[in-house]
Length: 240
Ligand code: NDP
Image (cartoon, rainbow, N blue to C red; front, side, top):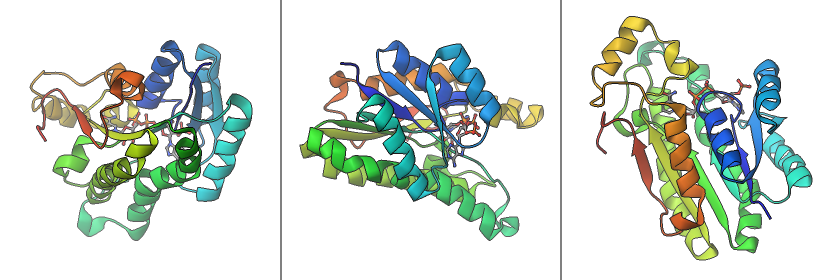
């Protein structure tokens, strides 16, 4: 029987590429999203992948949402914690709200999603948890104290939980993408984007599919000995 994969923020950008690649690899996929119903409807129409709306920032909503997915598709074998937001500002202008929104979604979100699924994965002696971190969690980024802190936190979460899951057949890994040509990055002014590209040794932005292929590998049986790692996919921009 096909394994079940749940992708948060799985209807747009990198998450949409991940959902599609997992489907192509034979998984039964559920794609979660937060509020953009139009994008979600278009995504389902194009891919046939079922979408589920809730916020990863809300623990109870995650538990209820996961229960809905499992009632429809069966127990979740692969969780991809991809949902993420930015609320950039230089630190002296950053508000408590900008800090909290990013921490709630990008860091607490991975707790809120992984925790309700954990015991089921332990009982079934199989699980794959893949957390999408960021190059900016590895190196820090001006104007992103909140985002860099949350994304660095995702890596610490990954390393600690990998140790707890290992004997139960659960691997926990992170992927740290560099700059990928999604809406998040295309919203940056062109001049800034050109300056970013000039710092990437391969001389271009990454493609969402390049992150998706790394996810498919980490989700596979062949990756059973890979746990607690952070896979850097950034065109050589930062060598962690
Ligand atoms: P997009 O902004 O293109 O898509 C974000 C997705 O996350 C959307 O589906 C959105 O749902 C969903 N989402 C946002 N907040 C929540 C929430 N609270 N609950 C559930 N879903 C939510 O982002 P990207 O594809 O660019 O980024 C995906 C991940 O990759 C993020 O974690 C990001 O930090 C990380 N990343 C991105 C890089 C890049 O260059 N783009 C580089 C490094 C890391 P909706 O459609 O409803 O708004």
